[in-house]
Image 1 (cartoon, helix red, strand yellow):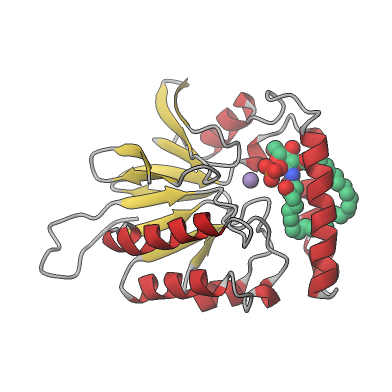
Image 2 (cartoon, rainbow, N blue to C red; image 1 turned 45 degrees about the vertical axis):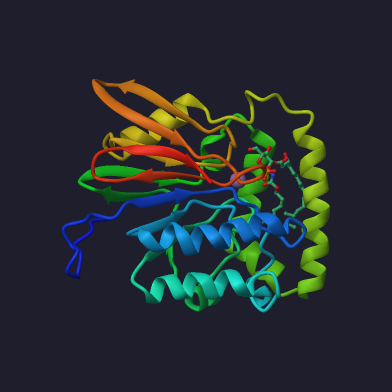
Length: 253
Ligand code: LP5
Ligand code: MN
């Protein structure tokens, strides 16, 4: 988003940062610590942070915000937001149940998937990326079911404990099924990417995560040049995309 600056150093345009697929959970405390340090040391010096989904390993509902693992993360977001850093969050396939209670507590803004933004004067299209994996038919059927508001209402009416147990079962099933799927099926479909780019009038950038295959793809489509940035996950090492008024660069912690 545009940086209009509001202090004496307003001539310095701060960068915007993009992350996804952190999969934060209490069983990987070092990743949560790395993320909290990243917020404090790097994001605090930025204009905005865009979290493009799968911040958490899974999210069972906003009544889980009191969890001891989640509290420091929510507090850190709020501190940053109060210091003037804008924080945006887009749903991933694992945390699409994040809702208003979480966003209000963390002072973050929920973005639709996809969303177009003005990134230092260039149009950038943001997405989690799972919607682009159109060859993964079983996943798309599952996605359609769990993104249905009626299904979600019924699911959320159950106890937190019961929801977590069902999610654990789905995770096991998903891991088993993924081991049988080809890498090609689990990647984005190029026609789906092209369709999204056309529909959004050829943005300069498309930034997404989900596939855990970080890369800078150059696309030529109908006479337009588009860069598709795929964000990296945080399994082994924290990674982010840093965009200033000149360029974007993939960074590691
Ligand atoms: O996340 P990732 O990259 O490991 O795998 C995804 C797809 N898998 C998923 C499932 C999640 O990983 C785990 C669940 C998240 C919790 C969501 C909370 C609320 C839902 C609660 C449901 C009870 O998204 C995986 C893709 C992969 O990306 C690559 O794109 O392949 O998809 C699958 O493996 C899904 C299977 O192909 C189909 C699973 C069918 C399960 C049907 C059970 C029916 C139960 C009905 C309840 C909805
Ligand atoms: Mn994902």
